[in-house]
Image (cartoon, rainbow, N blue to C red):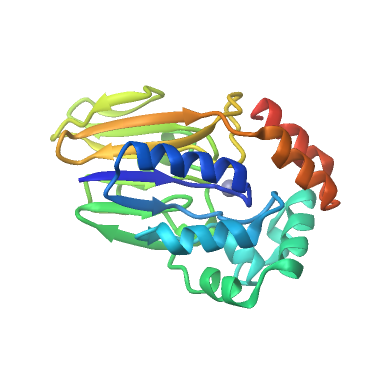
Length: 241
Ligand code: ZN
């Protein structure tokens, strides 16, 4: 079975469309979205409607819950708060309903899916340090867990040689090792690579590939500026920071 797994679209429909085109070419069997469909970008309705149509599994991100009032607005930075309030105003009722109904975690075929961390998913912890990775492994039973949230592709491992983490883009899964795989961000990468990130997981070949694709950054930036959202949200798309 081939899975296309992505996270943190952040209302960037240009980036989402390009990732979906790549996944179609790769002939994936199932699509998984790890949350933060909305926030920051200018096309929340288009992105929610697309995910609703194509994702077999979807979990909630902090921006999704922020927009529907499930995560308090005071937990967001100033520019994130501005975009949450803007999104609330233009989000259609049926799309609000979809975000409101998203679960925090899902399990499928021996794999665990969560936006931030298996450790207390609604605290929206950033899973970026080795110590946080170690704490996260005890909070799920499956061999593999996929996360997003930090917008930074990263792989944590727990195996015979203890805990580790690496940034390999392509690797085979060892049956004796457990993994937490951060799939990066579709619509707002923060690892100095502005291309949209996503993961191809082939469960038969036991292979993970963290992939990147270029998209029309200028068009996404223009929409953000035209919508009156903070211009720094447009600027950062060009640099991936
Ligand atoms: Zn995010």
